[in-house]
Every structure is written in structure tokens, then in C-alpha cells.
Length: 511
Ligand code: GLA
Image (tube, rainbow, N blue to C red; front, side):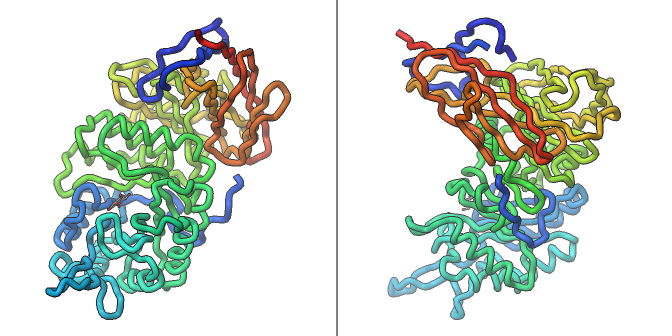
């Protein structure tokens, strides 16, 4: 990055984050973690398959059994994908009788009923089938009165539904957020369902799905095992990138038993290319995201299965330390992401968001390692050890694609490594952008190579202007024209502190 090379002009940011018309020309010179839900599940991000994208509401017993068989036959189970999750549309719908009176889809005892045509054997039999194959069965419910596709929801019936799911042998419950009352509070309704699930005699992964609307990362770690951070992911590159951008700064909230969920793996869906498929799995692994396959595994192509079962990439996702990785640098469309792994190793993804191949470099100092360290990179997609790299590495990354390595450094000191980070403008670029209001969005990208970041403080001169106990670490900086010098002070979980390179901002009014 180039902070020092004189005044730069920058009305040329990448498409995906360009601001609107300019009134100001900006010139650039230069958790508190609540206790986790203790159901002992999902110590590493859950892996499995979800019916929503391949089947929609056309889920049925036959299709789920065939999927279970395919998960086993295609090597997906062996690779770690053990949950087969039925999403919306499985139950009997509310209807009307001949006189037009509403008839509940629930039975006379108020229990949910699997659609009798599509699930003639019931759910218990399907769970037994999944279990007989060494897999687990997930189901879908909803906090409001109706699911997103209009099937009966759990509102007011949380205990009854939790008990029913337990009696059926369900292992995973995704609880959605459609048709809730306008005054409903997500922490309360999810806590209610979570408590009823916890009171049953069955341990079930609890997946919170309010699309990030209540900032669930701030409360959901003690209520569920994973929480969606945003809306539904579409199977295209730009949407994957925009959801990726929403994950920046959420890393401090994740850990064993509690995961940020940026939604499904679209590997094999839409028109995603092989490079894009690999990129999504690489990024979701750096993010310690749940790996829930969203493609039809009964007819998945060989290269799609090859991506999904790439063991060394999955091993990064499933790293036992359970520390979510972070974006460590960004030059607009070329990004570096990293994740601390057990045995003081690190995983690194170089991401090329653009339509042309590009060279991307990472310095060890950006990863919190000594700048002259010799490291051994292993390319996780080819499975090849690369030449020993001193101080950093640089490689060409395919268009719309990612390169992923695991780095080990036998000579790395065994003492705690202090955190690192940088202050950037906008959503990450160090080259700045145009702003129309004079409010400049600044962000800190903190990272710790051997643990977690616990505190970030932004200083203007020596005055603290912003303090964060957890991310996302961004804020609005609004000042009259002038020259400003900012730094960030970052603290890690071992109490080590470091201060970033200064960010010097010159703000001028544009005529
Ligand atoms: C919501 C969820 C999706 C899916 C659908 C089902 O949109 O976010 O993941 O469960 O509902 O209707």
C-alpha cells in the first residue's frame, strides 16, 4: 500500500464500493464475549447440506433419502459434511375447509405435521434413516406465525415444537424470522426457542436466522450455535463479494460453539466458475463459516464435488482453535485474508475480485510475523509445497478467483506475537474515495497471528476518538478541511498492544 508517496487523487474506486457524487475531495498522504451456549455442539463450524437452494419447498422423503445416499456415496460424509438439513416447506400447510373456514396445518394436539403426501413415512423414519447412514437430520422452523414460505410457524408453540423435534430425533434446528410482529425482539424470541430446545433430552444445533437484522453477533453466541449475518446469498460472484464485505470486523464474536453464518455454499450453483467455486470455499474457510452445501448433490458434477471435498481447505475451516480469520489488507479489488491456525500456522487467501488475472503480494509483517521470517507455504488447492518464502510472497491470482496457502514457520518465536493492523478509508481501500457529505468512513483491520483481538482504539494525535471491544471496527470521521493524523491501538488476548502506521488524511473542499 502507498501511504507515503505524495498526494493522491482517487475518484477511481472499484465499482462495488464507489460513493455517490462528490462535494468533498479527500486527499490522502500517506468483546466483550458473552458465555457460549453450552450444548457442546458445533465446536468447529457445522458442515452439511441444506435443501433450500436445490429443492425450495418441493422437499420430500424421496429427495432427502436420495440426498443422504449421495452425501455418503460422493465422499461428502467422509469429508465432514454430516448434517442433512430440511429447510422451509416440509410441513402440512394451513388450509380452508369447504365453507372457507381456516384449518390449521397442525394436528388436533397442535403438533406440526409433515406434509402427508411428500413425507408419508413421517420425520422419525427419516431421522432414523439419516442416523443409520452415520448422518444427522436438520429441520426448519420460524419465530413468527408463518414461515417465509407460508407454512405454520412456531410463534407461541416453541416448547411444543422443540419437544416434537427432539422426539423425532432431529439434530439441527434452523429458526427463521418471517412474519413476526413488528414489536418482536429477536434476542427474546430466539432465547425462548433456544431454551426450549435445551430443555429437551436431545442436543440439537440451534441456527439463528434473522439475516443480521438485530446485530445477532452481539447477543447470539449465548443463545445459539450460529447466526446468519445477512440476507440470502445469491449464486453469483458480486453477491458473494458483497456478503464477504459484510463479514469484515465480525471475527471477534466467533469461536467454538458460536459462528457467524454468511449463508450457504453456492459451489456448483448458478454460473459460478471453478475459480469462483474455489474462492467461495477458500473464503468461507478463512471465515470459519458453516459449510452448508447448497447444490443438488444427487447430480453434482465431478469438479464441484472435487471443490467441496478439498480436504486441506476444509481442515482450515475446521481448525480446532476456532478463531475466525480477517481481512488484513485491501487495495480496492485485491485483498489479503488470514486466519490463525493451531501449531502457530496461518492460512492466507489472496483474493482477486477483478476480471483479469492479477499479482497479489502479502508481507509476513502484515500477518503479525517477523518481517524477515522464512516460512513454508503450501498451496491448498494443488496440495503442493512451495519454495521457502522469506518475508512474504507474491503470486498471480486468476481473475475472479483466489489463491490459498497454509504457512508454517519452524523458526517462529514461541512467545506471544503482538497484534497488527491498519487504518483504511472506506470499506478497506488504502487509496481513498470520494465522499458526498464530508463524513469519511474509516475502518480498522486488526489481526492477531496467534490469538484474538480484544480491543481497538483509534487515536487522533494522542487523543482517543473511538474505542471498540468488538467489531465491526468502522466509524464516521467528520471534520472541516484540514490535515489529520490517526493511528489505531490494538490489544490481543494476551494483553499485548501495538500501534498501527499513521493514516494521514488531508480533507479539502471541492469546488
Ligand atoms: C429465508 C431464509 C432462507 C430460507 C428461506 C425459506 O429467506 O433466509 O435461508 O430458509 O427463508 O423460506
